[in-house]
Amino acid sequence: MKTLFVVGLGPGTPDCLTPQGRAALESAQVLCGYTTYLELIQGDFPGKEILTTPMTRELERCRMALESSAAGKTTAMVCSGDAGVYGMAGPILELAGEYPEVDIQVIPGITAATAGAAVLGAPLMHDFAVISLSDLLTPWETIEKRLDLAAQADLILCLYNPTSRRRKDHLRRACEIVLRHQGPQTVCGWVRCIGREGQESRVLTLEELKDEELDMFTTVFIGSSATENLGGRMVTPRGYQNKV
Amino acid sequence: MKTLFVVGLGPGTPDCLTPQGRAALESAQVLCGYTTYLELIQGDFPGKEILTTPMTRELERCRMALESSAAGKTTAMVCSGDAGVYGMAGPILELAGEYPEVDIQVIPGITAATAGAAVLGAPLMHDFAVISLSDLLTPWETIEKRLDLAAQADLILCLYNPTSRRRKDHLRRACEIVLRHQGPQTVCGWVRCIGREGQESRVLTLEELKDEELDMFTTVFIGSSATENLGGRMVTPRGYQNKV
Image (cartoon, rainbow over all chains, first blue to last red; front, side):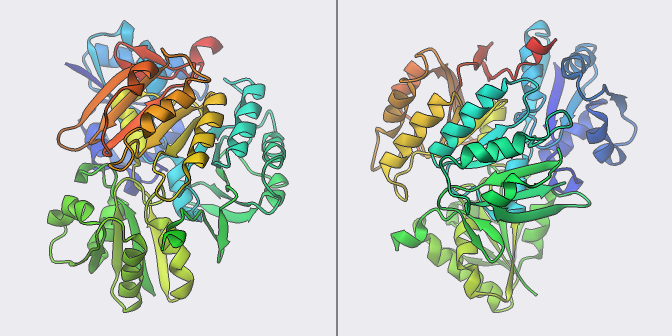
């Protein structure tokens, strides 16, 4: 059988890559992915054939990986975080029907929601939504509607792609939508370069978050009405204290 | 400094535990946790002092771990999946103020949402909500409201604790709420015993999911309006195909 692994690297450093993911990368003859992610791990896996395309050519990259597997080379497509959360597992499986001889194995990794949460404390201890603020593939109206309903549901929000070069005001607009349902003192947090050199984080209020200038390497957390700032840590109690 | 690690083991087998998590467990003198999770890893970490309590005594268990660290023994509290998603990171940080001498480090693991998604295909490729159907600590009315708004937002849903001994009809009621906003043919899936012996999974329609009899070791996925069944795999296209 011809195999294509789709591997989530986790936040970036090798100590976040699972043994299952490492075994897949070791067994692969070809590594495929966006240059930045390949650079994070390439030193650990020398002697592999490398396939890469620029950032926006996602489908082209997926097809290269499928063609490589179909040609008989065990191939691994690498993604940062988890391959199934805004990653390459989806587009590869969309194209899979054209390559019935390739066995596709998705190997999960630690996504920014849980990696970032661990840096801030425990913000995701209760029901939460993960929403991307990128309108490259999703109409902004859809994103606004989702933010509005998720905030109304009092879900904790984890925001991916909070900003981009093209649209600087996405985060501000997202905060304004959440402010329809949550107070300005709602506890929020952000983490930049999770688990990598230069990691930064801050716990702040929703009012403060609205004016924060963040970049695309940042993951943002907006608390529910239950979320607290406990000594600088962002924590959403699940309710064990009430039970006792 | 006295250290308490809070470690997410991932779905269960050692090949899903990150090197970071493994290093924490190796450096710990004391391992603390619910018996079932400790049994999954105990063989790999011999010679540790073991602290355990029955399932429902969460706060007691957290306090035991904090006391152990405060007494000078490096301690690790273990959780399945990710410690910050319905796990022990929250209650430990809620009690942390009483133990200022203990340095608490949360180490993320792979949660059932992403581990289960990888088994089914790529259901979580777009915005999603994680909601627990357990009403042990959350009023059922709150859960119903969240399901209703999340389905209205056309979020993919990942449901933890879909059933319990006490309430067998939670999943059916959740499906009925989603059916207010999504069609009966909406693509769904479930995974049982993710990454462990006896793993099972199924891709099915929302109408079929309503009548499915699942147990508490199962994670359930309900697609958005965009989710497809591609050759038996549950995939939510993100829209790369439209872009080209």
